[in-house]
Image 1 (cartoon, rainbow, N blue to C red):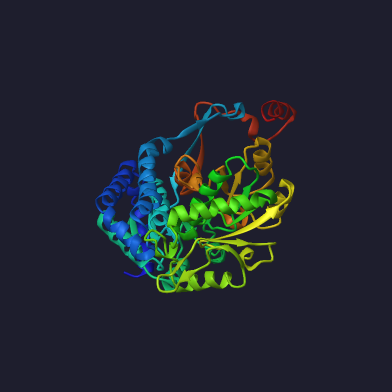
Image 2: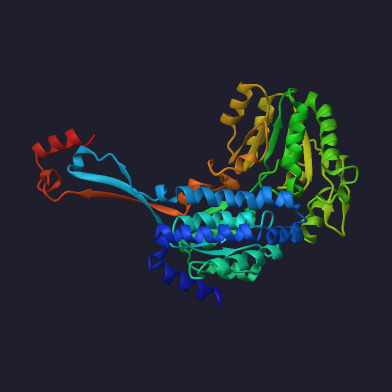
Length: 456
């Protein structure tokens, strides 16, 4: 079946209204949940093959988060889908006003390779929960996970409801030529612009989950070793191939020396004396990205690390001394285990540096001073973040996750996912037993006075 036929069949299936049935939505989600639980070993094996992810990391960052989102949606769909009554103005006497969510229709979920399972299935869960049909397009850069997703959906879902299209650039191009009712894209800024351009042909609404250079600010000495530990976790998890990883560090001048010592200790604690030989060090996804990262390290002032293995596509966790934003490492999102370290003298200087660049997807601040925390929260625009930690804000269904400006638009997770894939329909239901004459022609002074009493 070609892509055009897939979309056509889903449109026909959506018109039957079966996907709007809450019981049907839950049934589909439960099937997916059961399959994941029964095939956890296969999913872990696919993640190992594509990225060399350890089983613990695979569960913590992909499978576990997906199951958590499934459980959250299953618990709350029925409540979210109910009509929400709102106040009706006296001018609309006698009537009732309410809102309710309706699905968009046939949706497209395009996912990246860095968290290939979770970032394919979590948005799709929201689309299914909201009552849509879904076409999932996993990344061709993670072929083993792509195939396991294809197998899972084929064995759990009616293909007219949810299906998977595998492939690369050609399939992406064909999909973007179709008329979807909603497009959810996770990936790079450049491809996000292309998706938005294609969507504009049909005025298709989009959510873009992109990335950018997410800063991390270290402002005081209290808990400096803990800060190094949490920054090392957030930066080197998945070999830095995380959209919300700390992309660069801004640290107060007098803290840099001690911080670097602590970071070196943490890297040694995490990966040993020879990180390239450590079995749990995630590899760079492919040769293209491996070479890009090595090119960025050329002629850099490396503080720690910097070695790589062209056979395994592994790169050591690396710390680099950077003087300003003209450095090659500051020109694009790094998306690898390389942390540029810049210094600042006062917090206004750090805030000014951040605000001179595109709005990031995440921002992290390590400070014990509440006024510093609040100053950064109020002065910088970014998707989301943490105070005294990194990346964990995306690991809950209670918080929406998304970017702003160049780092994306729209949000998902939990109720935000349900809302993202739903149109809010507003309705006023009027009684027939009374019909106030004020709004009808002809108008006169009495009507004018009465209208001014009610409408203001």
